[in-house]
Length: 383
Image (cartoon, rainbow, N blue to C red; front, side):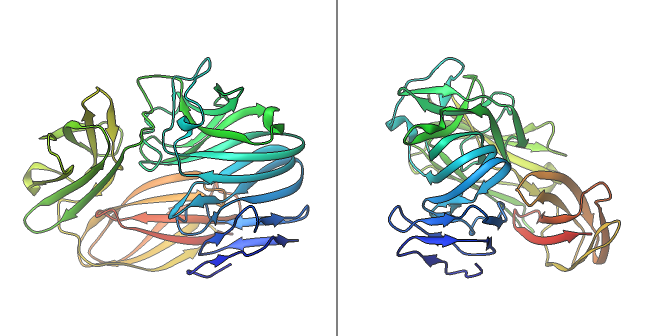
């Protein structure tokens, strides 16, 4: 499907061979189900926020299938789920609601669960699989510790620890966590959500933080909007040269009622790098915003006019009015982050190589983030 306006199903629609999602949403329902037959496959870019199935989708006939992606979501949010080593028939849907309304009882190994989202799996035919849940900070709450991140599933009205057999991505960014192999999928409806084994990490709260950075000749302007029922007390602006170690460069009193904040720093006080907000709430918990790249110059026009696949990798052809830094991320077709590259773009025309010699042939997604947070996304084929 390649339709920015999307489509709405009015009755069950079965795909016998391959479904390719390029752009746009498919609106489905239990009475208008998207059904993938036993031989059907799906090709979808899990990094595209506007390309997914909004509603339930069903895949039948999996037999020890190593990996199957369900690109599901709700509204403007794709929150994919995948099954590994899966056997059975599976109907999957993403729900943008609080799973604590189903149960607020935690089992052994689970300290807390997400308060903003969950997935349902309706499985048949003695189904078994490992479940991989995606996250996308800050839309999934604050993911701060990958080792403490867990898949939680509901059993006997208790959120049990589904494990963390593997994970992808980084805290504060996007990624996923994989459960252990589960045999409890035969329940009429199985519920899954993100969870944490530690009270000191992975807040996964109901709050959302919208964080924007704008460069100008006067300085770097920060603005953020905190959507929360709790009151923030203080916000720190964190800066890092490369995203590994962050320093506090400013602290702002957050005791306001409208939760809309603005702050400005001048260039001499802040070098090029990565910034993030750390927000302290009145109950002692901490929220983190998305990370934004900044440059100590105003961002001028920047064009990517060619991305060429070669036997060495990708040649990135750009043109910029002035020099500044960008961040390049390479994802595989399943949405797994394969490589992150900081790159300096010089004034004028540029030709830079993205080394992919050790990558297998196939389709990859290249995301290029400029200093104001804007991201340009390209789909490429590695020879």
